[in-house]
Image (cartoon, rainbow, N blue to C red):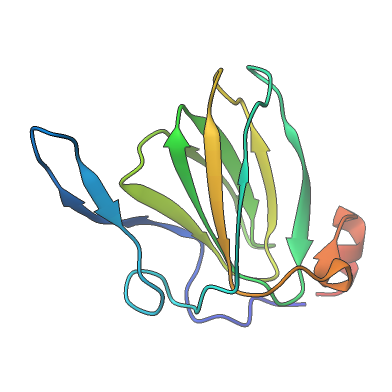
Amino acid sequence: MTNKNEYPPHLINLSRHLDHRGNLSVVEQRKDIPFDIARVYWIYDVPGGECREGHAYHESQEFIIALSGSFDVLVDDLKSRRIFSLNRSYYGLYIPSGCWRELSNFSTNSVALILSSTPYDKADYIFDYSQLLSSK
């Protein structure tokens, strides 16, 4: 498997509308992120310092935002491994299909919002890193 997307894993800054009453940020499909949003889910109540097991997708692309708190995302695109620290709600991490990702180092009360390009499909998941390597 290779990364079929034209964009590598990277951070994307979102628009910020600052106001003394509270700030607002926006993400729009095909404008701010390079895919249509088919699913939205969030991860919360992760004990401080904990990790979420890694996986990759055959087809799905993701955009991950730290809505609250902070956490790290290790991304392996089979060419290099990078760790992205997410700790602000006005930017997020784009992860194309075919990339291994692991979320770790969660701060207490953090919330990870994930926008996905596909509906849930268990067959799209790759849970074994060696399987990802062999499909390259």
